[in-house]
Length: 222
Image (cartoon, rainbow, N blue to C red; front, side, top):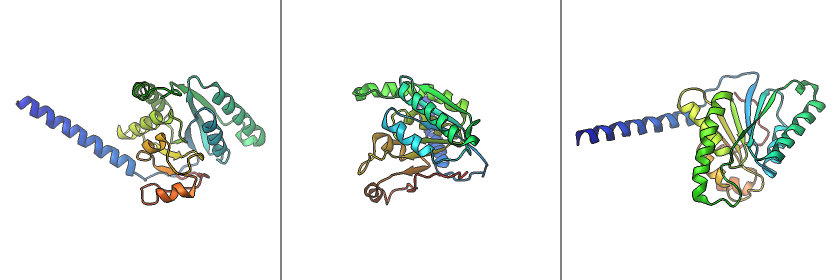
């Protein structure tokens, strides 16, 4: 009986510590100004990739190096990213020597995949995401809704919880979401540092919530 009580107390202490660490990491806004930011961008297939690349087109070369994360079966996004980077270098010679990298992880959920099995594929994706995030250690994670972004953002948050590095998480809800958040948005609403919606109707619904509504033109703020 005593052993059970000790184990319960230890488990409670660990849980309380983790909750406190999560609260501290999410509340932290103490950033050091710098000339450049290492950015990790989560690209989804189809429209998600098109939207995020349009957003990246408005960012300066100060966001460097750029790391892209795509699903391991998503060749279309890889082609779009390579074309985007080549076009960016052609239009602005200052971007010619900016490094970018494409990383692949398993999808969290395939189209029409059952929800119970999604739990296991998401855990598998997260298992492979954390070593990637730990290796890259980005200053900023930028995403706009593909399921792949959830394990990436959780892994980025985990870096801060473990005291390795505070990673800024910026979530931009897809423009097709006019009145309701996507499933990824509902999850990352609670984990992101900056949460952005693009329609007034959705902004009004979230007015009394904790997020800061920002424009999609993101500047260097750390």
